[in-house]
Image 1 (cartoon, rainbow, N blue to C red):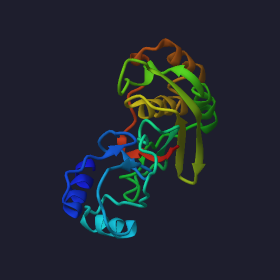
Image 2 (image 1 turned 120 degrees about the horizontal axis):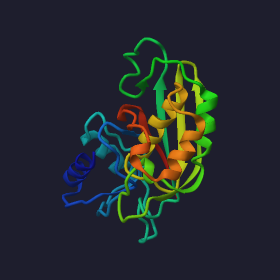
Image 3 (image 1 turned 120 degrees about the vertical axis):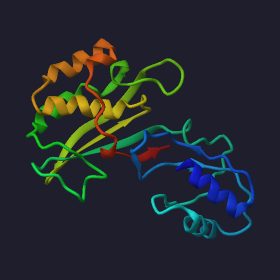
Length: 218
């Protein structure tokens, strides 16, 4: 995605452009709330740039809004206060061709109440070494502001907001909570896994298709 955005912007402006972004996502993960920044010289209206940029982008990438930032210290990643991710699970016994690109299919019955009890243990500032690897530096401490599941007909939707995330943290959290939901783990085991600070104690990451970056807050 970054390459597509940079190449299209370079064609429009004639300048070599390097985009700064709020965060990278794993292959197959979606983003509807990604935030980027770039320094370019543009002598027309921002609306004209937005329109022209979208014309040159591939069908699976779109610029939703442009604004000029006044603070030269602004960085989409380092200025962010928190990020919100959403994971979607299709729960019917049969697969859904309409949801397969954007939801993980789990046909086994799941206990939503137990999953939410387990998710509550993640809220707060903790060492999340059991659930991921740092994107930079060595610290694996992150602060989760909220985490919980909601049922929407045949879909289960998990939302989690944190000041920052480790690599594959959300998908590993979801994989672990799904094991609670189907009865393979106890609710208490999630707290134990968190305290262990051992990646081997958590479940394998849930498939990338169900995950979406929905918002970056500043």
